[in-house]
Structures are given as structure tokens and as C-alpha cells.
Image 1: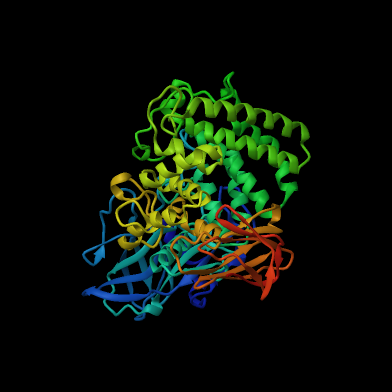
Image 2: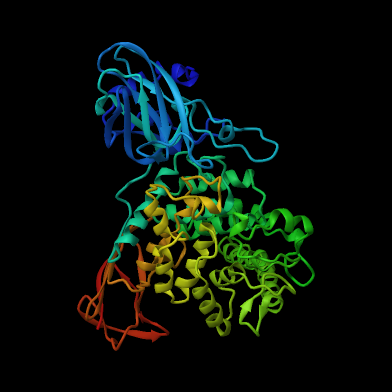
Length: 608
């Protein structure tokens, strides 16, 4: 059958056939944030891409490889000027050298028939997918629509074209791929002494780029709906790869209007607002949204002892812990839930900090009092001094990875209890999803276990990013493997955590004050010999280059208006710190040498 979308778009998009390869295609058409139908025109554009290879796999059938998966459609023409119909198959997966036409789960395959008339260029796209274009479903928020002018876009790497008797040349076909209109491939970089780690970072970086296609952080292609936890993880990774903040903010505002169902997802909205404030220092933006965040604390569920209470319905439906359900490490639910309350206590602290920034003094006192009460109840209710671990719930004798990783990541574990929790988590491994892995790894890095954190990222086996790399994917998955989530998307950016973790910890660059005017540079080196890279910020790019030889050296370039507090790993007998060749004052604090004076501009720092 003919694709109606293809025919309707031929005249409008005919001019695209003259665009230069590798350049944005008519991005100036899309100038508004939304056209009222849920699309985000001003934030995204189309880029014309050449194929990597064109192969005739059988007479008249051509396999075209674009090298990586991207969301888009095709611009196709023929060289002989004849009139004919062609069949085009789009795919994310291969099987025995051909596109897999029955891929697992929601891995994408689609087919379209197109009329070629003369040598005119034609836009080829499949029919819309009913699931990811729903606008008025009674069960979930509306899908995010791409601009009508584009036609249907879908994620694909390969196409097979049937019905071309003459040879298909690479100049006759382009992929029109959708990306963030502000994206700069050179804005960020990462390289270390571990080649697998480098490949994983690049996989994750491209995953963030490719999944900006909708102009709002969506949960992959299956639904194209933003979810709060997905959005927060995407936000962190987007900040590590782009200096812009339009897409995170568009996503935040959309989710404030169309919230989703999981309990812990509500708290992620507070995390998103705090991350924006630390990134931009914009208290005007924050002040307009601060009061609406109160509802995300779920105070209607607050019990008399100061913790969030879960009803039977909450336990059965909304308390999520991890996703999919098989990734919960045997979690035992109770009316007082350790994971839910970890998010609650952390969110109270962030609300107090943001309230102080915008002059809401009464709120600061109110939320600080709630936090103090909740923190005390949290320790009394969930911590078991006999095991040195946190229980899943009140009066539950089960200790899951999640009941311990979230308190550690959110700095809820008192210093006296950290060693037992960290040691246990380190030895348990990746018994969680790609979502919870973000927080597990943060907790390990923050606790000085950088070697363990890096090992988990590159570990052999099914539960690591090495497994994704070795599968041949070019965008991170929704789950570690198909068997853990049979309906998973192969284009899910919440699986891209290393792209934000490696700049924040291995390069060591994190905002210390709102607006990134002050940052920390604190390399968590693990077993690496060197690492270098570029970290984008609103003030400009931070360049970091560190090496471990007989001394530890760190070369640093900061943009104008930024200063850095530098901490170097304390290893061996090294005890003298030099900045640009001159002895500098530094003090030993735990496993770090901390420079007494902040640095700015260009600096070479050595620990000898």
C-alpha cells in the first residue's frame, strides 16, 4: 500500500533534494517551541546523512547502512528517471546479513511502499505508529509528536529497497535524521587508558544526541512519553554533553503538566529543578516553579512518625523501587518503604536549599524540620545494627541492593555506618536495572570506590555496558538484555549513565555553586593511568587532562568567570603540591589532597 504521509509530503519537501550532505535541512522552518499539537519545533531539526555503505544483496534489492541508529526517514531518488513503485524496509536489527523483519519486543521494523516518478526526490516513511502518537489516551499522558512537516520518523540504521532495476548509488539516498538543533558534536569528549570505557562513553554520548529527536526527553520509541526518572537521568547526561538547557526545561514543564504514576518518579521533579538551579543559577526560573514542587513531596501520605506511608494500592501499583519488576533484587514491600523514604528525605533537603536561594525563609524552616524528623525516623526504622545494612521496609528482614544504594547515593548514611553499606554493595554487583545503576555508581564513586564503580561499567557478562557494546548497538538499551525486559526499546537514554558519571567523577568536574561559577575538580581515578576530556558548562568548556606517572599531574583550563576547588587523589608517599611550578598549600583530608586556594584560568597542578 502507498504511504499517505509520503504522498502528502512530496511537494512540500521536494526542495530538500538539493541540500548539502551533512548539513541541517531547512532548520529555519521550525522556530516556535510548540505548535499546539504537542510537538517541539524550535528545539529540533533535520540533518541530511549519507549512507556508510550500499550493497546489492540480491538482484534489484539493496541494503543500505547508515552506520548508527537515528530517528528519521528517507529522501530517495533514482538515476534512470523511470516510473516505478519500490518497497522500503526500515530496521534497527540485523539477522544473517539482512534486516530482521520479526525483531524481538519493540525493536523497530517497518515497511513502506513509495512511488518514484522520474528523477524527483521523494520522502519515504512508514505509516504512523498508533502507540507512540496517541494524544488522548485515558491511561497515560499524550505522546510527544514530531513536527507534521517532517512526516513519520522512526529509529533505524538499515534500509532494504526492493524494485530498483538500476544500480542504487549512495548519492541517490539520504537519511533525514532528527536531532537537537543546538547539538555540537565537539562540545564534549572523554578519553582514558581503558579503551572499553572510551567506547562506552561514546555509545552513551551518541545515545543522548540521538534521543533528542522529539525536543523533549522521551522514554524511547515505544510510547514517546516523558517519565520523570528517565527525564532526570537524561538531564544529567545532557548537561555532560551540551551547554544548552532548553530541552531539559521543556521536559520539566511538560512533566509538571503531565505527571506519571510511580511514587518515586514524583520526587525526580524536585531533583530536576535542583539540577537546573545548580547548572544555571537561575532563581527567576526556579521561583516560578518552586511552589508547585510541594505536591511532589506527597505529603498527603505523611505518617505521624515523619515517614511516607504506603497503602496497599501504593504497594501494588505505584511504589516502583526499580523497573522492570524483575530488577528489584527480591525487594520486600511494607507500609513504610526504605526506597520511597530515601527519595522523600533527599527531596526535603533539596527543597530547603532551593527555598533559601529564592528567599522562602518560612519554607526553609518547615522543610528542614520535616527533614530532621524524617532522617531520625529513617535511621531508626530501616537501619539494622546487627547487619550494618538497611532493611527494605519496617519490620522486614530483607536487605535488597536498592534499600542500601539509594540511602548511600543520597548521603543519608551516617559516617559510622558507611563502611558496612559500601562494602556490601561493592560485593553484590549490578543486581539492579540500568536506571538504578546511575545511583549505585554515584554512591560508590562518592564513597571512594572508583575502581569498583569503573569495573561495574566495563564488566563482562550481561549486566554492564560492555554487554551493550559487544551486542553491536549504537544507542543504549532500556534494560541490560532482552531477557530482563522482553518488550524493551533499543533506543533508551536512561541507559546512558556513564556519559554523565565519567565527566563528573573520572574527570572530576562538578558544580559547587549555582551557575557553575565555582566547581570542584576531583578526579576519581580508579585503576586508570590517564583521562582527559571536555566538559561543557553555561560559562564555557572545562578542559581536564590528568596522568599518573611518578607524580600525579593535572592540566586544567577553566572558562572566564569560573574558579575550581581542586582535590587530588592521595596515593603513596606523594605530599607536595605544585601549581604552575610553584609550591602550593594543600591539606590531607581522608584520601584527598585539597588545595587551600581555588584556581582559575589555565593551571598545571602536580602532586609529587
